[in-house]
Length: 132
Image (cartoon, rainbow, N blue to C red; front, top):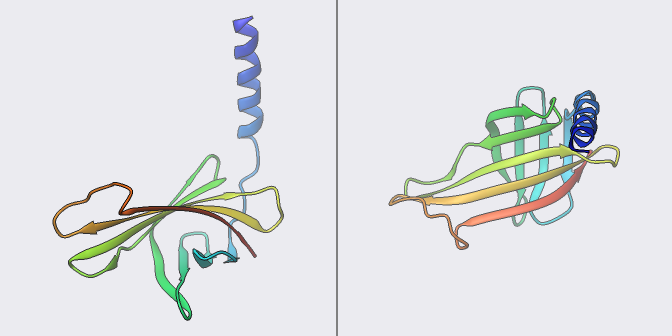
């Protein structure tokens, strides 16, 4: 029985690993209060957050890594802020079953000049869907 489960698991893993690489390139727009726009090219991601009255320019990514046969994109942005306090942001982008729609999960944390403290007060997480 265990051998059978192992064989089935191996086959399923083989099938899922042969899925084509998702083409993330394009400009995506968010409808929630977090991410306003992402411009994705082969080698970079330019992010814009929602601010009042317009958008906050996060700039271009400092690091872009593809995972899971290029079906998951992990992006790091340059810290925003001054010498005393900076906001560090990382986003994870995956395709969805809806055409021209991506899922974006973001994790951001504040770093003060004294040290990094990860707790409920200075770590923000967000998940939203963006469309072309």
